[in-house]
Amino acid sequence: MKIKYENWNPHKKSKVLVDKSNEIIAQQTGRITLRGLYYQLVGRLDVKSGDKAYRGVMNVLGRARLAGLISWEAVESNYRTHSLKR
Image (cartoon, rainbow, N blue to C red; front, side, top):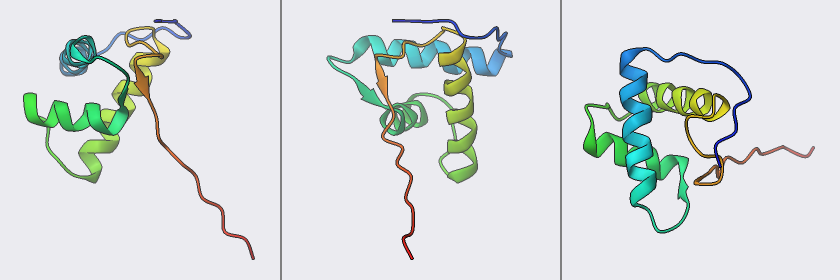
């Protein structure tokens, strides 16, 4: 389900990334992780691999989800935070 929480008008490169992400999501039989979606984009688009590129793609995908351009239910985030106990 696509739910819009904020307005966002992506630039051309970001729009291509969002459109390709939605194509990949539509081809899945279940949910896809953000990391899995990123690696699919690396393979299908001219997206570089690396920490900086990953953060950039995650930023675009996050904004696209908040803008209702990518389904919240189709993509899962396995982001985990760790805390150190002393």
